[in-house]
Length: 218
Length: 87
Length: 225
Image 1 (tube, helix red, strand yellow):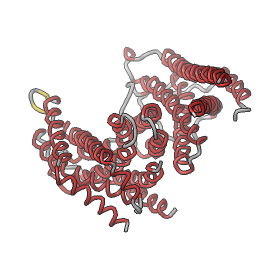
Image 2: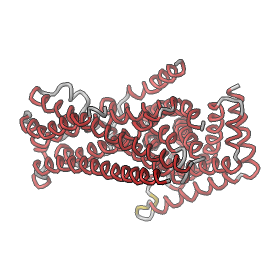
Image 3: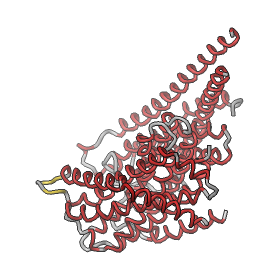
Image 4: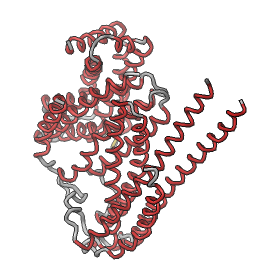
């Protein structure tokens, strides 16, 4: 992925620049109007957050059982991106909710579970930073538990009748909205890959620095 | 593998009665904005612009933190590389 | 062999605890103070807020449980007995199960004190459906105890372990807490909403299966150097 970084970065920048154009051209949604255009970024951010959480969990599980340091770096980077995309989802959701439901926030299952998943990712970062020796294994175990949370987040809207739109909305979008939606989804996913690559590079450099310090002491 | 299968089956079986029931306090679908009194409405354009600026600011902030940390690490590596040949 | 090892670990913990009863008494007193503070803090027109009973019961269990977990494993760390346990030629999972059983026994005693206390202070009809209440408390405590024992054991060698345990534990046990509180709230209705309570017990049982399985899997790789 390192070699593809610069071209990927350029592609993402172009996509991000074009996104507002696509969104402006998207079909006007009858019941919600202008504010529903937040959905083009809100829902894909949520999808990327869940993907990131799963990547973190799987990488952590692999690290726990195979002790592969590359997996540890991937888990760390993915956890930070889970926090970032979680902030994006939880930040943009209320802006839409204020119009749609009349309230900024509600403790309904999906929102609650998303906050819980986000909190787990944040506590992962705390553990990695402050728990001292053995924090990599600790964080990995935490991430494995956090990933068990993800299916609950996704399925909660289908199981319980709640305020939040169901998962059936995305596959059944009207044609005018499908183009911009999947364009934004692709953009955000590529953004995720770009940021992941950058973060893993940082982690690799930090590990190399640590090893240099250790070698210096010998 | 067998343990995994048993665990999965147990989870599904124990969750089945839960999934079969709806909690009695079902909540309605969203209320279209037209049904709210106009005085309580924030203009949609404000919310939309706020949403996009928020996303851009958040992503830019994160990219900046990576850039800053990377600079710090590379500066330390350079200073270490300078020290080692002198030993 | 597995069950024997787990029960041996449980017997060891109970024997040590019965000698001084330090953790038991301190946890009980903490739970008592917790509920008293809540009953003073959540007042409406001079009377304790009755609707808060479900939440306060589970918060008190969670806080007291965190304290008990911290103290139990601090004792293990101080005497370096955890390393001795891990060196023993027995299944790591059995040791983990033994520790969980010990924590569950302790929390059961705490709950025996807490439930009548909350029922008294908040005028809550907690005993209207005792079997359902026991089901809720059992499944909820197992979920909390399983994850708690895992993280407390992992943190034995970590830095700032006292503050790390809540940071790690509380986000993961939020679903258990939500289910427990909602189930208890449904139980406290007049008449108790048995269908809803049973649903929440089923959800808690599902959580328990997931958490215990994950904990059993991760205990081994995490406790090895």
